[in-house]
Image 1 (spheres, helix red, strand yellow):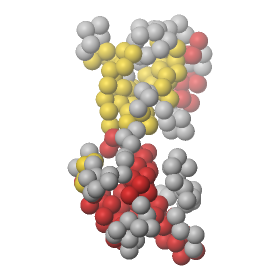
Image 2 (tube, rainbow, N blue to C red):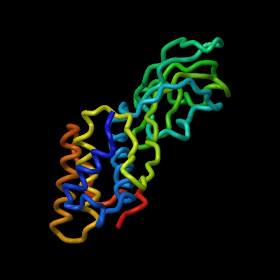
Image 3 (cartoon, rainbow, N blue to C red):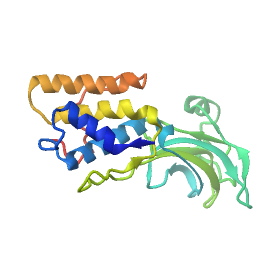
Length: 218
């Protein structure tokens, strides 16, 4: 667990604004949600949800509305609600080579394999196509809950493993520096963004200074 109050107080102190005069609590609440979303996309297991879900008829499906990113299908669910046959991932090119017409197969009562393309993070496909109501055990990363700025210092406790605190702090500082327009601030923002990914052992995606999903891109 991570105490959001301490995380934000530390970031505000780093920005020499411990009393939230230049960066309001609403700013920091927005930045923290942005940080959690960024973390969820890189480390989806940190927001892992495992649930039995009923699929719609066909081969293309979507994760629940509270989901941010698909992780895997684990197994079919039998008529009594218990895990049944395991579901394995299959490579799209292999499937296209050996069963090019699989999408036209008749809907089945269970899933054998699944396909997933990270370019479509909330969508997955089942092989074979299934009839309406077929249930499977789905694992996905949930969208982080909205964070409201408190009137006092009663920030929420984050249900995230404590070792992610450093990465989240880097993202908070990246967003805070991004609010400024000077070249030095832009360089500092880029460094903090790079530090976020480096601390996760990941390469830095294409450069950008603002999160397009944020309420506050100023």
